[in-house]
Length: 91
Figure 1: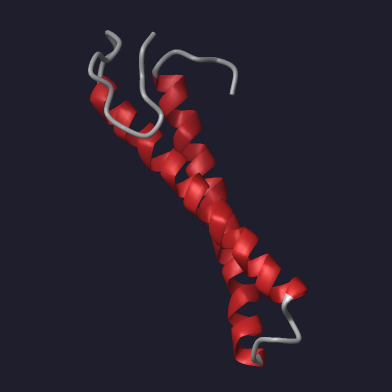
Figure 2: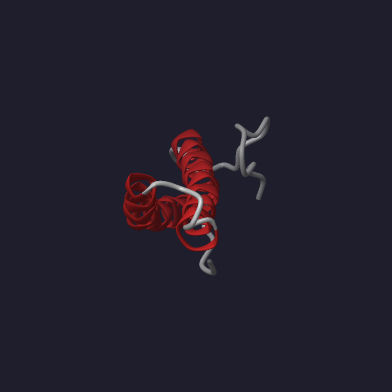
């Protein structure tokens, strides 16, 4: 079974709607990566550099942590849907 993680694979498996599953996998992986980076930055701003940034930035960082945690979970669900579509049973 051949599929790529962050780009469209040159050869897709013989699965109905394989291209759509490939796009779903790419979107899910990208969302998870971007969300992880933003969550890491916002936690760093919130708890490590809290004495160096304004209160409004800290509030924004707290909100971003919550919002992007939800985006991380949504990306994981997209990834699971794509992998299930490709026939994988273990995630």
